[in-house]
Image (cartoon, rainbow, N blue to C red; front, side):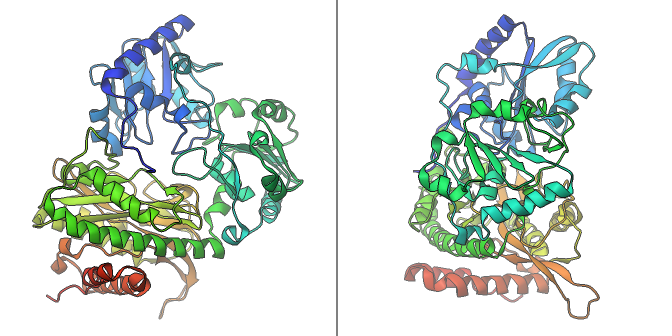
Length: 597
């Protein structure tokens, strides 16, 4: 199986590990230490070796930080993990702290008036550390450490990953690496830079048309690279893992090195150098004076080319076939009251695996029954596993990594009698999702300009959700990809080729969670009949029925009903012939037009 449901740390082990870390800090003469959920590449997923936050505290979320002081240990989490964190950490020794309510600096100032707080310069960005320093009192100093004290007490820490690096075929990439490098090198020259330091593994994977398996869920190798203004590249942490096929693919202008050559190469750089201070580690930034603050790959990577978009369409058809079979199976078996969250997640993965094309799931499946669905990023474990009972709703958020595309879909389904409050919330969420799907908008707008459209139906009922409406998605790369996103914080303009999720939700603690998610790709501007200017629009990639049993048709406008009926017609047309006969019958019923008032 691709997914494990066991926790590597429990509240019982966290206290002993905290004591060991504090003893090591005392031995080094350090009063505090920051333990982020991060590696040197600032990715969402980290290798087992870098699961320091989980090892120490038990918290397994994809974002967070623990500030360890002599008498306090604060675990900082965002709104997605408010419920999850309390079930995973020892509340007698660790204190959950909401990032939206209290920043790390003020919290440290509250509990430490003077002393030294250490941090690992490989695990934090310059922008993060600069912002933290501004909030600390004069008596508290922030020091970069030569080695990580937590690693010194983690005696069975796994080794660094060293999976093979493989070629991503040109027919799926859509553009040769040499052409990408030439295009981006021209951009560097135009900005007066001689080189750009790349620390994001998905940027390097896209630039060089390579993939890897160093971390779960995202097919990348953990590499560093320097792209020069002549289009050549120095690639680090690759020399020992490259075979003849990879060397031939990369060609003579990509030079492979071990990590032992990285520091000297950075020290020898001449002229202006580009570096993203929001994603590169402090360790690198400290070696590069007066760097230009930009990363040349992220925007071009987010503009999917024709081959990548076609690959995404194909991957979504394949994924939809698996999802339809899964939802059919769930409808047949859920009323029995014998299905657990883990059993449901495993069955879904088995349908995806049966495609013969699944390389991995694209993130840890969220399989939340009843009240567990209200935990936004719930991750079921053997300890938390819950039976799905009739009268509840089931939220399943999942995705697959296929060689031609990355998928991400959430469906919330009803089991047995429908809860009227859940149906009302579901219908309001659906209205917001449809509003984004139908949108036409002028060039230059980003997520901050349109996010409210997804929330408006909920707002009118005094409801909301504590997460963004959508995120970027890679092309057989990260399921969460920047720089664009569909959220109130993002002003990065949407461009043709961007793939984004559209996933409004609503979560009632202790009762149910609702989320409906499709992936969309931004289409080039086109004329609107009777309009004055071309407008961008979305094409929906996801092709899976939305549970009609949870829809209150009288709350939908005629335009919203028409959109849903057209969507379901398209689902049947594109995947109906690809599913088994029994599932085909189920699909026709699931995609039937909404009943007339």
